[in-house]
Image 1 (cartoon, rainbow over the protein chains, first blue to last red):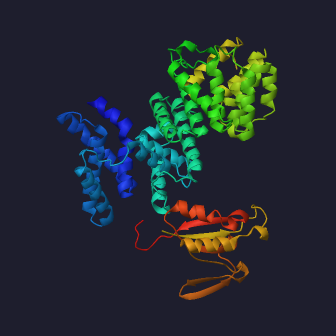
Image 2 (cartoon, rainbow over the protein chains, first blue to last red; image 1 turned 30 degrees about the vertical axis):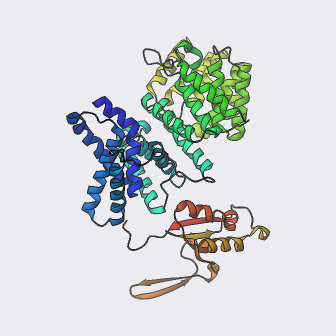
Image 3 (cartoon, rainbow over the protein chains, first blue to last red; image 1 turned 180 degrees about the horizontal axis):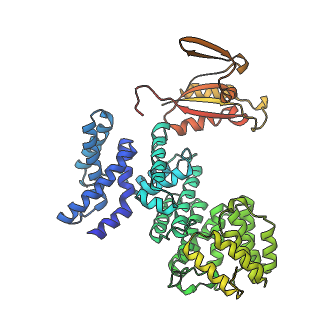
Length: 415
Length: 113
């Protein structure tokens, strides 16, 4: 029973939430009713067994709760009428327990597009998507971004208020607006994926949440089969996801891509990711995600780090830099140059960047520099850089990794 | 729902080019679609006055109240179904290009917080 409820929470939370938003326009009421439906399910399913269609049961429960609340408020005539009409029509339809009266996928799409509306600040979009679409609690979201729960509550509250007050419509945007908005949604989905799969702040890895981001990617892909960036994002996520069993050793320590046991890669995810990565580039598209997927595909195709086509990887990074010279892309390009032309060339590429201000306070720059210096046979300088990286690293697994690298240099550990 | 759109002079935008000023088309379209209720330019801030009552006394001072109002060059009142419609429409106002538009939803008195 609890497994059924957990699975329903994963697959139906957003649909339950979205249905109440669609019928009432009230996001706080939707949150309350979705919560209530799942609490009720706990007792009811224990007592009566799991219903044949758990999603429809939950939607009906949430909608009934909304009717109760609005009746008590009395002032909300028009919203109440909309709900009662929906209740009556679903009661008279053949599928009598189907409270959704709309395709669950459509409901989820409406919710996702609304949560990711560009009139909301990015952090509000992400927090609201995690809460409304994926059903994370504020505590879980706070842990993910290493911020306080009250910060998360504030972000969600402000986003909900902004939707209510500024006239952000609850819908999938029409043609003309669609492509632009879709690409805004992809940004949020990928942010959810990376914060779950490779948390930048050192939070715990959450493969389950990464899988949810992939599920959203699939939903968007099914709806927009001709959009190269949507295919690219799904490919990128799947190819990273395929390495989940290989990227930590049994002790929980980081295993770099070049050292991973490639037989541990999820071959189904690799196959699907590769085919999507090619699809994303088929019409000559060179978008942000299509290109990153192409990089991931180069790694996925290679039997080992040394047999990777590093020239192709550098070429793809050059294209990415031309779109947006983001510091992480520039850093990754320097690494690839180091693999193609040797560590000295990599160092030259790195030093040409200066020290991007956006990377201040993170360990990435020093970690990459330390590794290139190590490969270049300059251990004393490598030690200096790796220690600087170690002082800034936030994830315990990354910290242990850097400790090992420092120890491997074989230099005195005295300060 | 109603929006007030404030036309803002933004020195960082590209310089004004009268040849690209399609304000008449914009007004015609907005009026025909029924979303542009009214709109005008505002006289320059040199002709502004601030009126305040302090301790029962009416004070009138010349000039703008704050720096922001110095930049407001005009306004429009829009009636749109939602924010997307308002954004789509004001984005094509000539001053969205040569300046910027601040969109403010109207907050009716009979509407709760």
